[in-house]
Image (cartoon, rainbow, N blue to C red; front, side, top):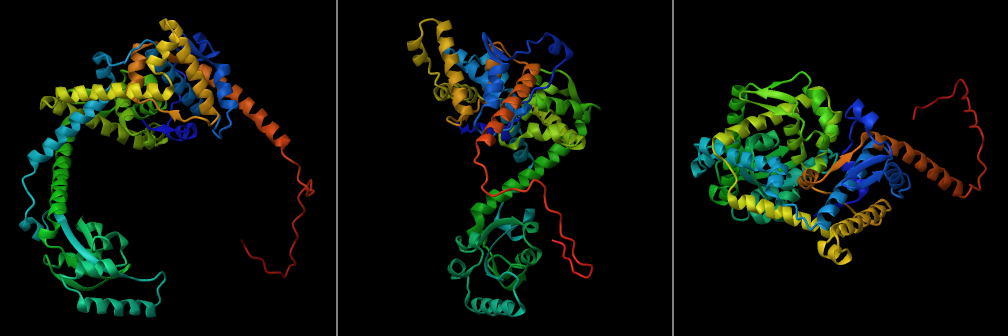
Length: 490
């Protein structure tokens, strides 16, 4: 389980919750930011955590929402630990991991599609004819020095000609290791591996394409220097070439299949798709059950809730939610359409009977349980330790809640690492126990924290020693140059 500093979490995650409705503004207890069962995160508590933190983190709504989300996840885990609940009820787990299982099934379906549509297999003939546009080669590079003069370039050419005169297929790898100016390939005897023709600079690619397998070129000049190139034989390139060939041909077949499926499905976005997607991106947790439709397609639709599940499946470091919230509507609509395309393909996977095996489902549940147990350990919520400390469940819950509050104090003081609770775990906990984050409470906490931070900053500045150099109260007037003086622009 990876840990992060709170500052890193602020940068990589966006958990801001927006005001859900006018009703919330009138009915919410504005002195409370969040609740989990009988526990409350007050405005004063959250503002103290933010405003009095010694870490250089911004005091704003996103940070406040992130800390509130950490508090909520930690307190829910505390409740589960105090009650000895390992949170592996298949009913909750299957719902929380829908996006994970969907992604696994979709990947398997597309692999099967690639295999079924691919008629070509790698061979010495496909290699020689460059079927699929793939080549494999090795080279020795005699590099030009930076800003090389004509004389320097001539010197490099003379050296390259000397090497070309004595290089053979037998000593090519040895010379490349000793003399090549391309460190990436030199260690491999000059081998650059399989590559599509357009990947390399044109003079290099043209030279390779003109060679038969095993042949060695003359000097080939590119912007990098002079190359001596050997097109690899199929025998020497077989392992990497075969893998690259299968991948390239398979991807081509998959792309064609997806394009045809897209045309047949006729994905149509709602006029409000971009606005609704951005709103969901700002508050993913609050839209997990949103039934509003973003897009329709043949025999189905993409709801906001399903859209959120796909977004939450993506790596946190990509900050997809934050990117969507700030992206132009045209980009957001393209992204929504790509997610709708996933739903289209998933229906085809369903029709093809692509499912997880019983062993895979069991493994997923086991990994989930292990993740919960690991989180308990990292948060100091080991159920055995809690059982030794408290006899009744309510007593254990109080002890566990107090440990979480202590941990948050240490996190905000930079004395402990913030531990990210995975989205599936958050979803399961939210389904099993009562939890809510109040938008109005977050706003009030940010206002109070801002005042606390400003006061603390002023106090620190007042404690700074005064400068021994007298400072002018007003800046001196700029000297005016004589009329005939030459001036330069910086």
